[in-house]
Length: 114
Length: 113
Image (cartoon, rainbow over all chains, first blue to last red; front, side, top):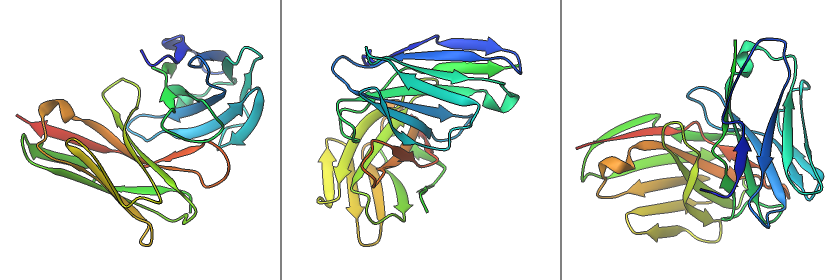
């Protein structure tokens, strides 16, 4: 157990729908990151939050949004879903706002859009 | 550009042989280079990392080298074992003051017993 908790583990939904993925960071970590991993691909950075504020943004689609709450958990909202959004979505957390050895990934949410 | 180029995409070795994965990058300001191992359907796990002020680092059967001038870094696994079979990602930390990680496309390593 990495200490980073993601729910749900699996999600199957139809095109056009909206889903919310949830992430609880490891205790004491202030940064939360979201990554997308499509089939047989590397991980693509979506967004970083640090202590409640957006710190960095990757190639995140306008249909996607995220936030970090006062208790530091984060949610990734995906709307108007398309078949191509099917992927593994990983959350990671780290103690500071920088990449370091303390960077830890959760087990991911597998999203299937049908 | 931003990307990290990783080669080879697949690698098959006999148990006990060595495996080498090579990566290149273009942002000379990058200073953090972790390597992640991902088993099928599981989360990426950090196996070793190196910072730009160090040229080489070793941890048991795993070693990484970094040539900052040439902007390439490599992972070396010696005495491979079947449990080393997985996808390996070379990664660079973004040079901006964030925690963004930029992943290579991955190398699927198969160790045949």
